[in-house]
Amino acid sequence: MSLRSLLFVPGDRPDRFAKAAASGADALILDLEDAVVPERKGEARRAIAAYLNEERRLPLFVRVNPLGSGLSDDDLAAVLPGRPDAIVLPKAEGAASVTALESGDIPVLPIATETPAAIFQLGSYAAYAGRLAGLTWGAEDLPAAIGASTAREADGGYTAPYQLTRSLTLFAAHAAGVAAIETVYPDFRDLDGLALYAARGRRDGFTGMMAIHPAQVPVINAAFTPSAAEIAHARRIVAAFAAHPGAGALQLDGRMIDAPHLKAAQRLLGLAAD
Image 1 (cartoon, one colour):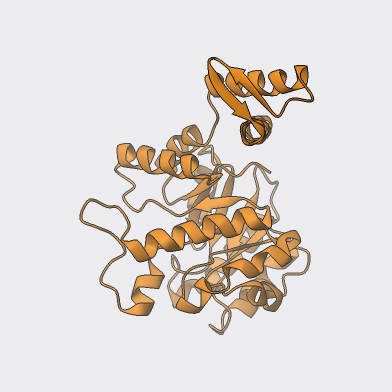
Image 2 (tube, rainbow, N blue to C red):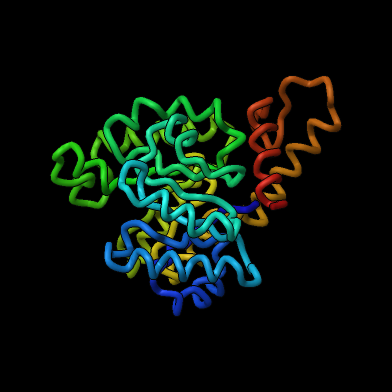
């Protein structure tokens, strides 16, 4: 399953579902948590349950309310019969949260950094990789949880604690061998800023990104799609090692390439094939 872009849609706005599905996103996240006020949770559950039973054009994920909220059991009872492609679990605190969710064989995408305790459980996801659709993080709930005024510098970059949080999530996802999903870019009107942000995410090793508005989807897809030049270069690296199977290192275009370059080239070609 290619997961370059995952677009959030409020669960109580079924009038937006079709437009979101036509946005080009690789998956939708039908939201029962932050985007839905308490008095509309029931309406949102019914709308999502109905949509899950329609002909599916793309993978449909559902973000339920956190464990311990008193709402997640009702969320799951409403949506699991419709077989969503994954459950997005907010405020997850490691593998124990994945176990406690009781989603059956439906994969889980934990939002893995929204509480202080969650940071210390990131390494535990590797043991449950078979149950995961990926791993992602958030920079909004954690500052509130610890009394920080913001997660960002004046220029929009993350402050040191949240740079660390982002990096640990990235490494935890790759340690588990699952998709590493970058968090949202809140200013949906700033597409130039989004393009830079998404490009940095791919540069650093993220494989996709969440979106909050359909206009963000083409920008994100472009950032996480290997270019023709990148694909051609990767193929040349693979071909060079195929032609010299016993070589530990080779020269290509005047530069040394070795096993890490081959691994990176193979991974890029795998992404291009998805």
